Length: 148
Image 1: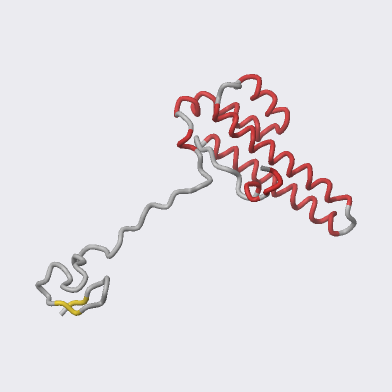
Image 2: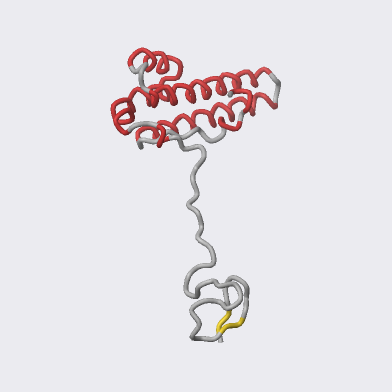
């Protein structure tokens, strides 16, 4: 005797379907839907736009405000570059705000540099994602509602 994986009913060995719920034997009770990353916007951009403009998009993360200005001048029509300019600007703002933390004695002297290092690491990760032909929102900055 075998048991139905859906409802637990005991069935005969030769049965193809459960007599109670009708679930087929040998097939999973449900098919899991593929998980999509809600922060990955790569599919919104054409492959040609990504391949032609990823160096300009990387400039935004590598050189901060200067890179954003150069990218805005050189690739102003690229949606891929505009996406990365936006997120790079948010990282620059977050890094600037972290430097303001150093005004607060003791706690700010520790928290400010730690936040600046986190912003630097996020910029490096974002640069690698650009060269990997990805358009993903940086991890911590996307949760800061005041930067939206």
